[in-house]
Length: 175
Image 1 (cartoon, rainbow, N blue to C red):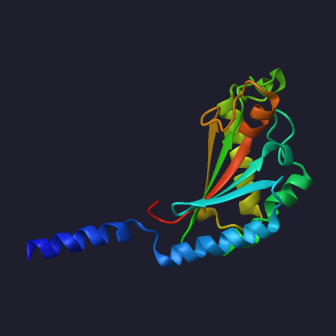
Image 2 (image 1 turned 135 degrees about the horizontal axis):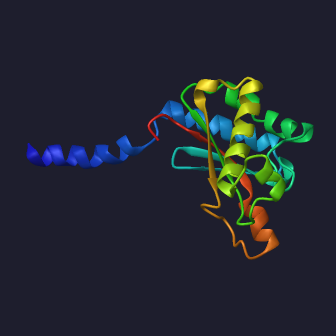
Image 3 (image 1 turned 60 degrees about the vertical axis):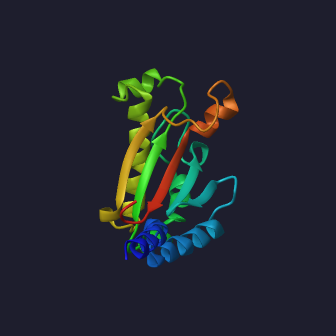
C-alpha cells in the first residue's frame, strides 16, 4: 500500500507543477496573437514555464531618458490590447528597466531622482495606457526595476539600449 502511494505521489508531483490546461491554452493563444502583431525589431516574445513575456525596447516607447510616450508609442502598446482584454485567468505585470546612466537634471527637476524612479514612471505609464485602452485594471500591475536584471553589458551603447526596456509578462494565477 505504501509503495503504491509513493508511486502515485511521484507521478502526480510533475503534473501538479504544470500550468492547468485552460491557462496554458490562454497563454498559447495570446502568444500566437502577439507574435502576429509585432516584428522582431519592435518586441521579443517568449513563453516559458507558464509565463508569456513581451519585451519592448525603450526606443519605440520613450524619448531618451524620459517617461512620456507619443502617439506612435501608444499605437505600439495598443497592439496588445485586443489580446489582453480577452484574458480571464491571467495577470499582466508591467516592469520597467533602465541602464546605469544617471537620470538627467531635467528629470531630477520633475522629481525623478534615480533610475528606479524613472523605471517606475515608465512602467506606470505603460500600465495606464493599457488600462485606458480597455485592459481590465484588476489584472494589471506595474513595477519599476531600475538598473536591476540587466540583459546586456552597460559598458557599450548597444548593451545599454538592450537594458532600457519594458517587459509585459502574462502570468497565470498561482505563478
